[in-house]
Each structure stands twice: as C-alpha cells, then as structure tokens.
Amino acid sequence: MRFKEKETINIILESLFDTYSNRVPDVKKITNALIDNNIVSNQSEIINDHIAFRTMGVNFLGIQSLEKIFLHHGYVKKDFYSFKVKKLDAFWYSHSDENMPRIFISELKVNELSEKSKAIIYKYTDQVTEDPVGKLDLNNADEVINFLSNPLWSLPSLNDYNDLLEETEYGSWVIYNRYYLNHYTISVHELIDKYNTLEKFNAFVTRIGIKLNDSGGIIKKSEDGLLLQSSSIANKVKANFTEGSSLISGSYIEFAERKILPKYINVTNIKPAHRRDGFEASNADKIFESTYKKQVEKNS
Picture 1 (cartoon, rainbow, N blue to C red):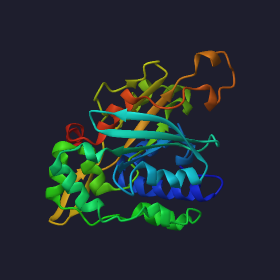
Picture 2 (cartoon, one colour; picture 1 turned 135 degrees about the vertical axis):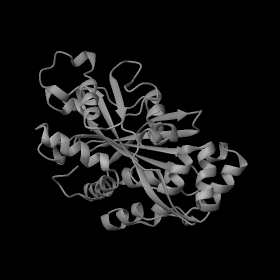
Picture 3 (cartoon, rainbow, N blue to C red; picture 1 turned 30 degrees about the vertical axis):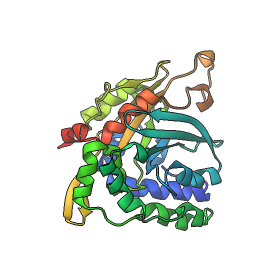
Picture 4 (tube, rainbow, N blue to C red; picture 1 turned 180 degrees about the vertical axis):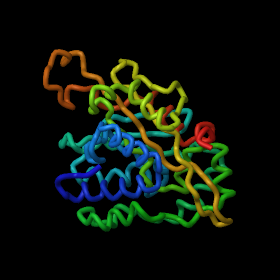
C-alpha cells in the first residue's frame, strides 16, 4: 500500500500499513505469492478496498474521537451500521480520491455490557481524561502516527483480558490491541482475470495455506448479491501482560469483490464508481469474528 503523493494522510496510512504487515505474517505471505505467480509485481499494485479500526464507545474515545483524523484529511462520513448482538456501532468513510481506501470505524457499546465487563474496561479507559485527538496537530504526520502507535492506557492484565474475552471478544481485542490496524482489504476484482472473483481468489489463498473465516460461510454475500467478502483468520501474536506474555488474536486480511451495478453492466471502461459501494451489516457481522477464539484456534 504505497502512495504516489506524500500527503499527510498518505504518510499516516502507509505507516499504519507497515506496522500492520510486520505484525501479520499472512500479509507478506499473500503478497509474495501474488508476486511469485505474476499476478502483481509489488505490494503497491494491490488495490486496498478499505481499512478498519476498532474502538471503545466511552467518554473521550470511540468513533467520535478517531474519526476526526480522517474527516480532517478529506474523508466524508457515510452510512451507520448497528450490530445488536455484538453490541457494536459503526460508520464508514469515503474519500473523493478514488485511490484512497475506504475507512470503517466501529465501537463497542460499553454501557450495554455487564457490570463486571464495564468495570474492567473503565479501569483502563478512565485513564483518558480528555479527547486525545483534540490535542493533536492533525497536519503533523509524525504526531498522528505516534498517537496511533502508542497505548492510551496502562498495560492490561491477562486476567482482565480473559474475563472480557468471556463476554466480548471485540472488547478484549481492543483492550490490548488499541488502534492497531484491524485489517486491510484486497480488492480482488482489480486483479487479473484468473484471480478476479472471490471464489477464484479464495481458492488461491487456500492453496498457499491461508485459513479462512467460515462464520456465515467462507463467502459473505450482501442481500443485493453485489458485495462479496471473505477474510483470513487472525494471526496469533505474542502479547505482554502484567503477569507475563500470552498468545492472543492479532489482525487479519479481508478480501472483497465489488460487482458492477446493473445500470453500468454494458459500460466498457469500468471504474470504481460503477461498482457496488458501501458495506453490508450482515457481512461485517461475520467478518468481525475473524479475531474470535472459535476461528483463531483453527490457526493453531
């Protein structure tokens, strides 16, 4: 994910991707396989459909805080999504430059959790006493990168992490991983013909040993049939807690196929604007589970 113009937001996104790809072995595994099979010549040729962040819906944090970075740099807030069972809300954001990835930001509705889980989360998030993004010079890439790369609260205990895991696997992920990039997304429809459908691409990554999230089926399909999504299972990462280290769920990779809208089916020069845009709550609901224990254990 490289950018031709080194605008501030490009530098921020590139830094996030570099940290993410170093932390998620499957990223380089897939990229190297794409290069070895002459599908792309380097990472920059892979079109990134969107990136996603997870947050805590508490005072001074959550969507209302993190989104300020992207709104400042030309992103526009789009549709709202609600995930009642998982107790999550989300929005997505688009940019007028079609080369920029969409942004998807979700947050945990902490006040809907049990008293025990709320107490654990507040023990850490109450350490944040003002909106941290409000203090940043959003035109200073280094300042924003430093913010996104460092913890907002003290190192959690493994006991707290495991207690949260019982009620909200999303919450346990955020309490440790914070603003690490949750995933980036390969636009498979932009690849060469042999690999440009999700079915073909899934077969390719499966052959190289990537395990796929099968919650709701390997391919998650929108109601209109125009947005198809799959994802890898999160790689485990060695995490340091107050009691020592443990292996936990890290990040993963998503694969998306956006089909051509019916009204543009006869257009010869297809552009991003001719394809299905936005997201689908039912798809995203299952994609979230790429970091869930039931899926991640398959990577053991």
